[in-house]
Image: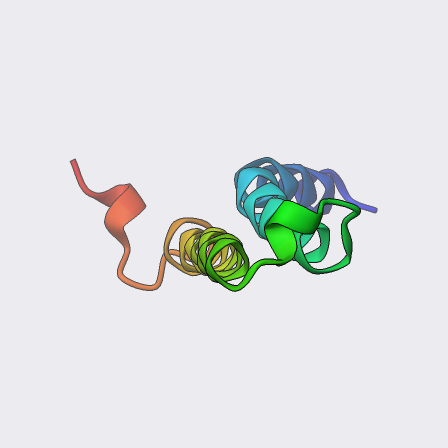
Amino acid sequence: MSDNTKHLAKKCVKDAGPCLALCVAGAAVALLAVLGPFDVLRSASSLHVCMALAGAMMTGGVLDLVFWVFDPFGWKNEG
């Protein structure tokens, strides 16, 4: 690979890393709530709270990925 391609790949991984980590953490919370060994998490109210938290984490990660990494509005170049 050329140096420019390597630099671009490193930059993308560096910028997207936290976004993807947030998505993976949200999925882990959802799986733990549904499949985990904790009976307390399987009650209806706890399950709703855990699933809402997981959905918010995954949505936040995806929005960060779209608006920070891909920068559709050019916000990184301002200021």
